[in-house]
Length: 160
Image 1 (cartoon, helix red, strand yellow):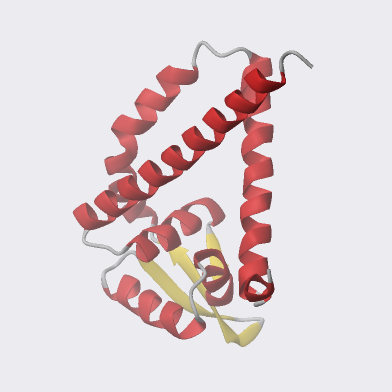
Image 2 (cartoon, helix red, strand yellow; image 1 turned 180 degrees about the vertical axis):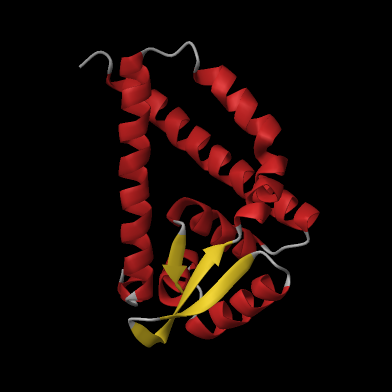
């Protein structure tokens, strides 16, 4: 096919752009965490809680890829800093339910406001089809990330 070299080159460019976007995203997360006096894991936990509302400590461990011991220390630190509440689950006293304190949510959003505004401006002229395509693409990437995390956690990566 005459377009195969062009397609291969475009795919290479797409993969490179994806890696660079991922790297810059992490660099930005580290800078924001540092500005807030938090670790990136703290920030990931708080971001997850902002989306989820409440979660068990086990769910936080799974979403942050931390051990339960590390999550226990992190949650204690975030509770002492006033970012979260942590209460025993009335249905199962062994579980702890953690919730982001709503009055602290705006403080966590502030460092992202400029970027969020610029991102909204970037996509405001995209067609519905383009936006739908991007949502589907990101959903597929999220599924792949979760699958890779499961693969790494299972120890399968050492056999790959």
